[in-house]
Image (tube, rainbow, N blue to C red; front, top):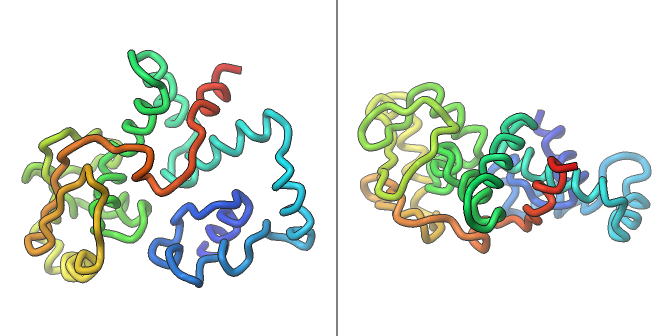
Length: 210
């Protein structure tokens, strides 16, 4: 499965942080082999740099969201529809909905190295929001919410591991983090320059409006 996730990043051509901490170092597949997987990967890399059809560009942006946030087509389509229906800039609203998911907030807080691990922890009851168990990864968090690890996580070794990670981690501005207590708080809204990925989110709306 690890190799499959690496091949996805190489095919897309950008770091998607599918393998957690490995993606930020020299062992990242996109650094070691900065071309698509397969026998003809290097030649495909040259053609990728020249662009592609309009549909392929739209599809690529949707795939980036799919893999980066771990969402299926149905979920992305629903978020796109909701963002289109609201007043304001589509890209800002859509991004805030994605980043406002509980699994994204837990990842941004630095408790775990990947969104996949965050979703598992949430589903298994290791995450509390405002002191209460939260088991739905798609839950939308709000300004003022606090996120902590459940007391039982200490017995499983999850809390000590998270505490060690937090020593060397700095969250984005919209997440407040008390490293000593292991408490994250939502104190703002996410901005595009804090995401760590280059998205053209307008293409998501174009993809679903075809």
